[in-house]
Image (tube, rainbow, N blue to C red):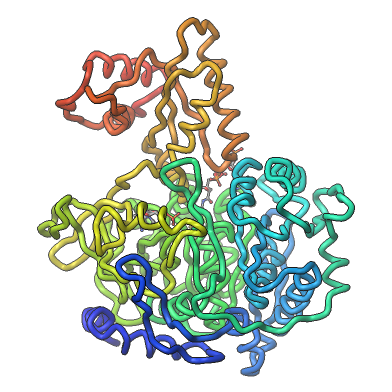
Length: 632
Ligand code: COA
Ligand code: AMP
């Protein structure tokens, strides 16, 4: 075992030496000129400049060439359809090469963008890797977003093609994707030249001649295409995530740094060996899905599980344990909300006893703060280390974790342990001084960020600077607030912006406010996150109606709930809203969202000194009580 403190120290003090060794874990077509190009400092850094590589080669071809073609690359397990499929590395190579050929035949070249709007089916992974193979830049859009959100991404990424499926499947519900996509394309006309559709048995789809193609026929007709060398610094993908306005941010990931960091993390953070079965129970539409369903396990020659289901209800709270025992999963990675859902259905963990899950060595949790109750429950019921770790779409891999492959440290509930090697995490006050241990501040990372972290935002260098680098010059602002203890353990407590975390999904309340404000009867509104036992947080809207509106407020509530679902998507889980006479504000007109959240959560709060009219808080309290808040 190593010494995590020493490894971390070296990663900061001997950066070039550390990242040179890490880079040896992957194959390069041409080695780098330098480890880090900091000529764009203090804003822009590029890892392994001058190097050439191919991410698809390292995730697929490399393992076949090394004689592991028979090993399972993907196990697709879909309790929702009852289907299962095992895809070996050799078979994956065949599919990915063909898909790459199909894209090439559609005129897609290196640097072109391709949107992938697919459910959790093997074709989604094949599509991502095929883009990587020819140097095209993929952008996967999560299926739970509405056409409007998809259209925003189409306009920003300007993809030449979209790869999709006829439908996604939610428990008890088929979601036809093609009509959603057609609506999005109507909202963003004249950009996309080709659409390829995977026909699923559960839904038919309507072909638009000249634009749409059937996946199966196009794949059969395609000639396999080889890996194209790309620069280490070329973009591999764009992943849109919630920003503080309705416009999502296009997080860019490069090829070389991303591969090096992710490959290294498999052994050093997760303690997984090549060939083991690794399962990230997330969705390919999220960063966890990109990094730990697709890229990292495949870079490491592991078998990855592609699970099309939910922790409960597909068919029951034992589905995770069935998958683990049936496929020999060594490490499970999911969000705490999944465990809260299981615990709610099966508090005694009776389903766990029905399966032999002795193959499971660890459970990693991320995506939201892990509440100690969930951590203790999982530890007790599973009898394996439960590791909370902290990261963001922007980083693509953990910023803080217990690095089990280097030196396991004692678990402290409520903390994702210490900064991962490569990250110089500091907690700062407004004057950019490190706050004393135990005191809250803004959690920042001293620049440069390590490999895999976003080099910029797609087509938005200035927004990148404004969002992350301007407030604390020389640092990356994570947007999270928290503290560090005497042992350097980090505690991530809340956001410093309007982002909320609903069932491990990152959402912008600002984006929801834009939708509410668009309702004809709404004069003013605010959306806040309120605590929820299952999903961690839920969005709640407050609306002040325009003078003279005499409609039943419950009708307006129904209408805005439907509007958010239609414009952002079901994933926003926006179901709580109330009409109020006024919104509480400071004298300078700032809405007191934090105070409203405290009232909704039944927490003590201090009367803000700058409040314009304290009586409004009583009105808010009454309004919340009318919809059952605070709970219990
Ligand atoms: N396509 C279309 N709709 C989708 C969708 C998709 N890909 N994914 C989710 N939705 C819909 C759901 O059907 C639901 O709609 P509803 O309001 O009609 O019920 C809504 O979006 C919210 O979905 P979800 O957040 O999944 O909530 P849920 O109530 O269906 O399930 C959990 C709750 C906790 C079981 C679920 O959120 C979960 O499994 N979370 C795991 C965490 C996770 O994967 N995090 C990712 C980061 S690690
Ligand atoms: P996303 O970009 O969707 O992965 O969301 C990132 C945000 O989720 C972080 O900035 C945190 O606010 C939150 N988050 C992720 N993991 C954790 C964790 N382990 N503990 C606390 N918050 C977390």
